[in-house]
Length: 157
Image (cartoon, rainbow, N blue to C red; front, side, top):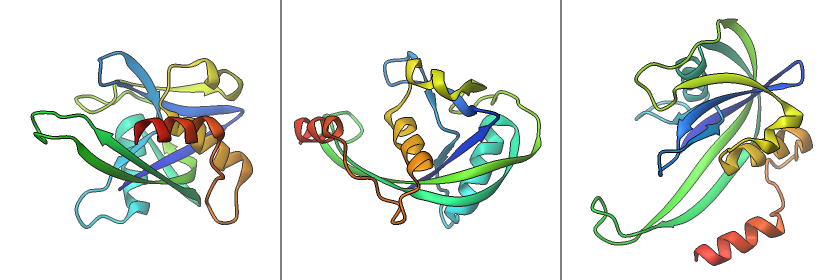
């Protein structure tokens, strides 16, 4: 389980850059995995500070992204592994701190990006999901599946 923040200010989205599995850089939402016993509310605040230098106020729970993947046979698992990721997506407002890059962490760069330019970035799919949650604010926190994502998930099964 992980928690992520959508922080929008003056028409810009706060993102962090992380290496993809093949080593190429891709943009991600600030956030990450919960530590043992940690509340997801605390997770998202900690992760945003670690990855961007900012402190945030959590202003709402936008929704939950549920993703099921089958990871290929790797040394770690010794066979294909089924992974079910639950990612809580929060809205956040910057309350303090200064923009800085994470050192010796999972990301190497933090930056603001114009909302209109995000679709041109090399990014993880969670960014698009989170922006839909932020824009649509579904009362249940659940988005209706998009045909493209359904096709991708069917191919992965």
